[in-house]
Image 1: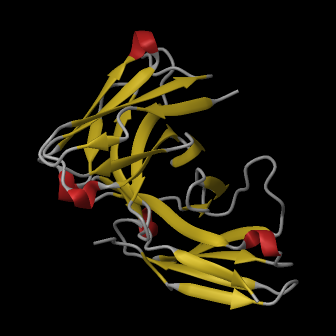
Image 2: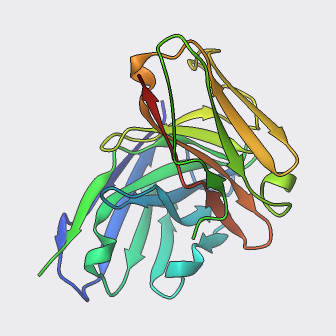
Image 3: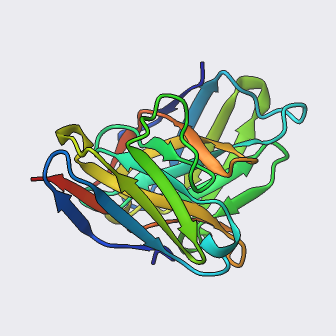
Length: 122
Length: 110
């Protein structure tokens, strides 16, 4: 069974750095199990779902152009975790953040976490 | 900002059919597989279609996907009240090296 769960602060102040962790089970990002990755998405209140970042088993990383200067994604294979770091947070970054498993061959996100709401406010 | 364009909303009565279109370009839809997701805000998105037209286990055949050139379509037949949600298309964009997501389509059951 594939599960993913996001964790991190629910409230951050403007200019602070957000660190979210995606803890997963049922698959691995180790080299021996290629063909998978973990992506991050967010949905601001009343707005569309937005893709943010993606890291593959081989540590290949991709980021949405609009956040490229602020976003970083890292994987910890031994802990089955992927971390999203977003710097210089702004109220416009208030959103529900989701992580999801990426299947390379099918080129799709087939399993998703429940999501975590992050509010940016002073 | 999104490179994939969807109509903002579609609606139909229960039992009817709706189609949702997703328009892109040669660098994304034209050269890659398309997926479709259903999303109710506050709940995790759910994969409905992958590889343009394949359904994951558990997804009823009321949901079907197709692709032609640089456009993709999701069809929902036998519409049910539980189908009210936002629907998104997604695919890889070779030129940008990013995952492209659609603008989302809200399905309303009248």
